[in-house]
Image (cartoon, rainbow, N blue to C red; front, side, top):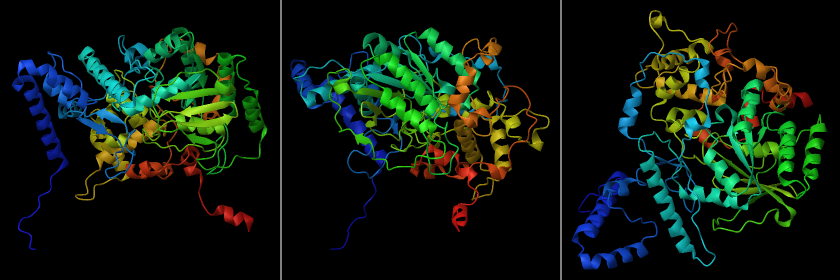
Length: 586
């Protein structure tokens, strides 16, 4: 039969507008057209039929209720995925065009390098009083799954609406809007005896929520250990200063510096346990559990691995020693040291190195890692020994007042999703002297000052980045590459915060006896690294263009498909000839 009409594609945008109009009509019918004597019955029927619905108060507008959770951005969403593939994806509030245009005004503004003392930061700067995170609502044993899901959805929606109402004047960060990920946090905190809050040592105060400490330590009486991960990127004196700061501000908090690259002096594809950091983690756990659990087998395993000089642990499959927990997020009553097993949970922002830390503790690859935030989808358990169990939890972006450029730099927001990367370059260049560190030059800027756009333009010229259509400079590609280099701490682009009062007492911490202990934890790569002064010139020439890491030349789509260990990423440039090993045997 011949076709009488031509089908017209119905886009997702039109479908979204259709659903929005339908909800608005329902609200109008509910509030205006229903008679007063039938409104109570209508409301009871609508509440019982909708599990996620929340009753609006009189002062709340219908538009805010409709658009609050709809206009969100889902990171790494698979469009045609089956099952629960997109269940634990990161969800953020979508930026408005006005916010993007406001930041674009800084593209051509002159850059003034701020002094070093302005890089000193505290936790109150990013987590003001009154800020909190969503907690599991009260529950009973006889509650059904449907009632529990409805209660948690209602409680979470009310929390987010109240949070935006209380901090309307402040600029809230793009925090996690996926309830399924928060349920993973609730489950991990309930079943764990000791919790590891893992932070990037460069941005430790921006990734350690004080309200999390108050709830877990003071109310739940949990043992907490703060892991200063990636400490090899910082001078040892700064790590010592951060230890003193957290000890004074949070007395019941134990601090352990850690570096996953401590033993990375081997061939590509091999991995060794981070012995120095692991031993200090065992000591911290022993202080919390006392004599309840015997941790000597864990300690002996690390010491035996430390004594092995020539042998290297080979990479293993990701399923060995690992148990993926069933997809159950129902509440449970916690029993401390159940069956004589110590359960350790991991909490932290995305991209702080939780999975890499677990691999470094095991001495082999048991969980996959990626530069893309939100790679770990659900928590899984790994047995370090027979009586020590480790739980890997997906990364969570906690509510804070952190700006978007700082979120991008600390890894909680993917660089590939940034709509205005040049603005983030402006944020970095006002704190790091990028033109001097990268030896950038532009003949047109002899009588003018550097701007973020000119920095990206100069880097595009140096790297030879041009667009395919008209052959102009690819400034966006240069900006994205600068962001990745700064995020990875490459080419001396290491942006980090200092504790309050550090600039005045720097000599005190540099001569501290704990500096040598920090150097052992950092590993051989960090021991040869000299800290770069904040506002001084560099006399040494930077590396040639051919020595820049190959990862910088990859597109972001290729990086998202990778799931390789960090040892492979860091030693990629050390392999000159991949087939040199074959010649040695001959």
